[in-house]
Each structure stands twice: as C-alpha cells, then as structure tokens.
Amino acid sequence: MRHVHHDLKVYGGIKLFVGTGSPELGKDVADYLDLPVSGRDVVEFPNENLFVKLHGSVRGQDVYVIQSTASPVHRNLMELLIMIQTLRLDSAARITAVVPYLCYGRSDKKDQPRVPITARLVADMIEVAGADRYMTLDPHAGQVQGFFSIPGDVLTASHLLIDHINKNLRGEMHDPVVVSVDLGFAKKGRNYAADMDMPIAFIEKRRLGNDAKAEALTLIGDVKDRDVIIVDDEVDTGGSIAQAVNVVKQNGARNVYLAFVHPILSRNGAERLASLPIKQIITTDSVPLSPEKMNILGDRITVLSIASLLGEVIRRAHEGRSVGEMFNE
Image 1 (cartoon, helix red, strand yellow):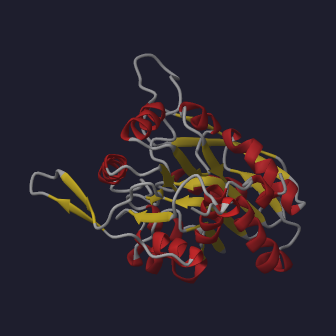
Image 2: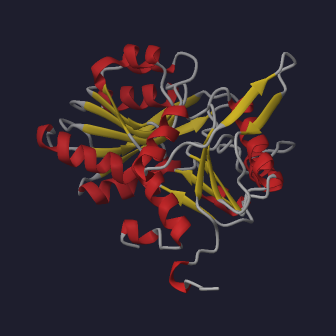
C-alpha cells in the first residue's frame, strides 16, 4: 500500500453547517471557501422543542457550525447546542462553534450579591454539548475567553471598520477625534484611535440599576469644532449611543459618525439611531439586520461583511496555520 505522507491531515475535509441565526453570513463564508453548505433539517415542534437531523454523515470530518446568538437568543443558543451534540453523536472528528455574536457577554462577573455569571454558563454549555473549539468576534468583555477550557480564536472586526473609515470617510472629516462610548471601552477605543492616528476622548457614564439604561455624565477630552467617531463593540437599544451623541454635540462636535461591530438594535434601537443627528453608521453583518431596520436607517448605514475574515480563519484552523499572521501578530 502506498502512503502519501505530504498530503496527510489530522482531520478529514471541512464541513460547514449554518444555523437559522446566520443564514446569509453562513452562505457568504461558504462562498469564500468555495464549499457547499452541508444539509440539515431544523424542526420546531408545536411545544417549541427543536429537532436537528443531518442530511449526510460527518464521521471523521472537520466540522464548523456558524450560528450567531442574537435575537431570538434562546432559540438560537439551543439550536447551536443541539447541532453541536448531533455532530458529536455522528462521530465528527473535530467540531468548532463559530459564534460571530456570543450572547450573555455582558454577564461576565458578579458585580453585586446574588447574581449569576451567565457568560461562563454559556461557555460551559457549548463545551458540554461537544464543541472542541470555538470562534467568536469582539466579545463585550475580554475575560469571556477565560471561561472556555477548549481552545478558540477570539477575533476582532475593528480593522474592517478602521479600513473603511480610512479609505472612504477620512478625506471628508475635519480634524477627527475618536470617542469611546464609556470608560469600559477605553482600551479598545485607544486601539481605534492609534490605528487611525487620531486623538481620543472618553464619555464617563454611570449605570443605574439592573436594566439596560445608563446615564452619560461627562466628556473627558476635546471635541469642539471637530468631527467625531463614536466607537463601541455593540449597540443594543441605542440608549448609550444616544446619550453619547448628545454629549459630544453639547460640547461642540461637528459631524458625528458611529462605528460598532454588533448591530443588535433591539426594541426601537433602529428608530432611535435614525432619529439622532449622525452622518454615517458603520457596522458589520455579525448579526443579521432585517430589511425593516435597514429601511429605517436608510443610506446612512454601511454594513461590512465579516465572511472573508471568518472564512480565512476557518481555512487556517483547518490547515493548522497561524491565525495571528493575518493581523501581523
């Protein structure tokens, strides 16, 4: 028997599965890799229980499940877990959970008595379901990666936002300054500012109670007569962003741009952003935006695709090559 050593791989070929939470993004990743999306059925019974059936065997294969866990959060999360377990029971060689937006990222610590650390629970569930690796994008808190015992790739889409701003918007901006939406985002905000060679300002805010409301208090830095780029990792209801826009406007800012990775835009978030005096919104497709929300935001929103980023990382993970090289690390 002839052995071809140079072409041996630890795992079989790549199999891509896409959950109902990321249909378009999953197809775009498949197109980037020039691979088909593997068939599966996801059935929701009248009692809201989910059932998954694969169309073909994955025995010995290197499997990637692409599923964002934004709204409907609990359905998307359970679907992800059930898909992972189904793949494990069918003897996949390796299973990677590709979760562009990981839910419960804000519940990352016990900051008061008698509360959970739900981000850790979600990490545990993904592992128990049978994932060997995970991949996610711009988690709200960096310590989330410490909740996983399995290896993973914690990626950032900030370079996509920065490249778009530098290539398409920088020329029209007057004396621009980056503004971090709160002090918790200060370190990441500094990275944006450094990569765009801009100064930075910060908004100090104090969260009140356990709901999603927060009170913006003061601006640290100078925005007077300058264009402002407000940066954040995600926008949920848009309350913090609205306060940030008001604060910079009250301090003499000219045009205001928003740049964030995850467009959650729950409840009336899209309407709130549309009502703000902002010139442009730059975000990604880590969370699918409905046509209704896109219509509300009109030509002021630009959605950048993360498909090539995820696709390239999947390819490198499969081939055992460095992911850090993509970012000169």
